[in-house]
Length: 211
Image (cartoon, rainbow, N blue to C red; front, side, top):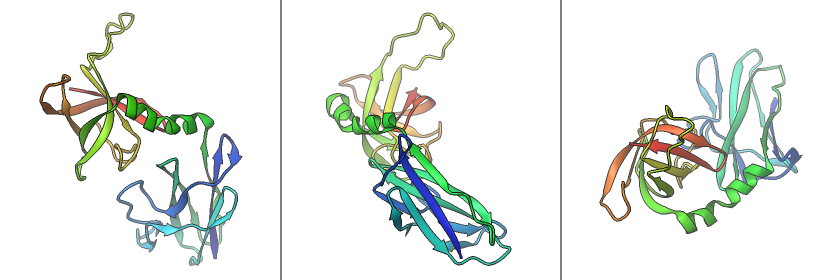
């Protein structure tokens, strides 16, 4: 029997989160625990991890001596998912995974609704290999050019979306190839644009330059 453990901290202090499950991705998870020698899934994605005490969650798994395993845990906090985990060989206790969310992260995520109510507009996100979704984005059109950096790549449109697999696009699923449909100019017809480069990312949002 091996105990898989995750500690969740806010600004370095143990704190409870919304939920913890065994899952290898923020969206479209396919396993929670699997063997690394064969790839066989031994605990299904979405399996709940019980809370033991404040900020400490544990799952007990009956492993086979000498077999190598890996696990991932998906932590939901502030409406977002964070992934942690590790690997072990049966009879060797795996290290505790720790997900440390700063107070700054908490503030950023807490401001999402206010920012979108004030500055947001609807866009359609087209994830690579996923279903289209309508989200609220903060769009900057014709952003100012930084003259002190004349060689910096210029993007006529910047789109900021939640770092979320349902209300934006998560860091775990995005690539520079996904597309967004939105008006290139306010009041114009919506067009489908390609994201070229992620120019900023934090716990709450990811901002892309689009063309």
